Image 1 (cartoon, rainbow, N blue to C red):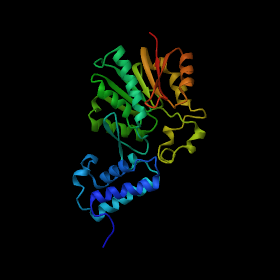
Image 2: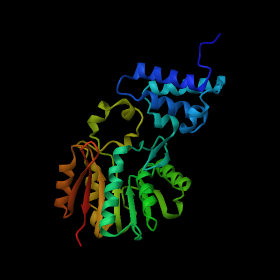
Image 3: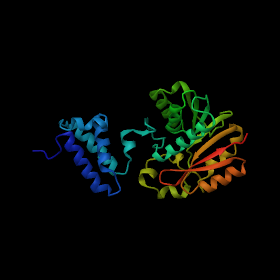
Image 4: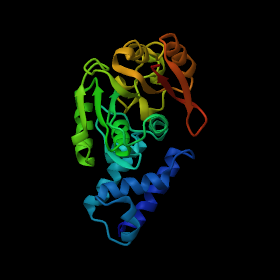
Length: 290
């Protein structure tokens, strides 16, 4: 008689136990197991408990085992299942895009807070997302700003295609455009600029967690020797890109707030720094004076 799990519930519990034993105490084995088992059999995670007693086919067992092997090899759950939730929306991923992270929602919150103070969410604004990746930041903003339009730019054509597909699937294709480009060289004056550019120091990348260094695209990570190359390139062009009275919002590493603030202040911008839920510097806000 086979000792392999016969039902979905048994498979999910066995997967969680295996993940807990091999990934250690800082992992999230129960959540990972639920997401991986659900994706492997093609069911929504929130529906999994409703069919706990359903018997598994041999093909489903193999699919679950393959997903677990990938997770235990260090691949992030989002890469295995092919999508990640951000701002309540589900974004599909590709090899050219970062996995959207909860900390990046601080950038969306800071941008919306400024819009609430200065314009109101029903104002028709022009937004540019530099280094758009999956399109998560721009699409999240458009979901809150019904009259606004946005342009997402990325150095990777594959990333631009991924973002374009996400916008179409989520219903924002008519208010967005995604294109390959070098920073914002192809756009004119706009109201709001957002960016989560590469900001990891080149020499640090190989010391990062394997989920990042082995699976995130280097193009989206490598910020040069001091991690500030992308910020320098964008800030140097901001006066052309952004209307007087406009604002730019940049995600940063936890220790980069002072360096970017100095760079932006010297360029004539008014600067504020926003922290994430852990209290770390996460977003630098730049205002172009009228």
